[in-house]
Length: 254
Image (cartoon, rainbow, N blue to C red; front, side, top):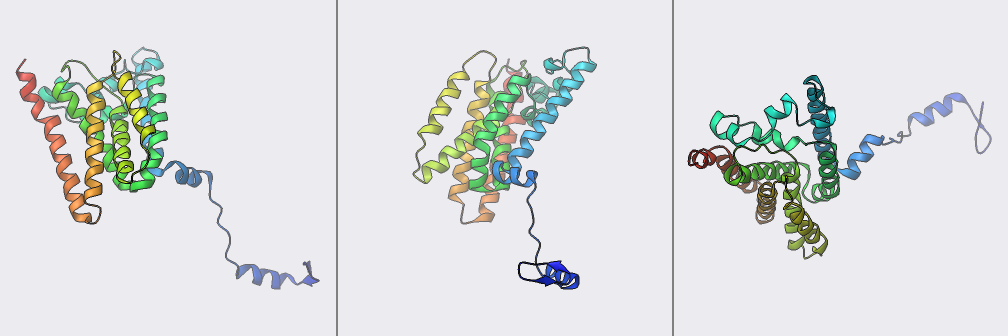
């Protein structure tokens, strides 16, 4: 017999009673973190960290310090080198450069910004729209660099995509008449920092404008999902055309 709150129960009765009760599911730490920070945000952070480790290991194999990961063959092959994109057809640089960072400080600052802005935007628009706006902003940043940047200077970093998230979040907050002073203040501070040497102002502006435009499309087509998909696809095609085709004309004009 098994002691109960009132009297005793036989083992068979206890087993039968437990079988009829639905067990309580305990959320693991990973599921709890996904709910708090957003599954897409955490995935993007993970990809960026993995790519940093890969480039750091590549730097070591090349005889350099792992902290100088930008001095590695992998980094050289994946960073956005405008000449490589426009003259040699290395189109992947437009995408892969958004997941590279020059040193641990660069990585830490961008990932901190992503964790600050990403979960809020992901919660507002959902995972897939969030990912689409992020990737579109990254391509928009690359297009700005391809069109107006120094064609012989390689660029890398997730900041263009993160600026896109800030711009998109500001548009959504404005549409809901929320206080956007905090977002605009952070944007202004970051734009000022973008004027420092070694930071791609063109990439930041390209990502910011693309994110704001993408959020505008989400708002205008929120009641028509097929139209929303078509509009975002058209924006993606336009950005890719600017990043991959138009720079050829600009570079050949030098």
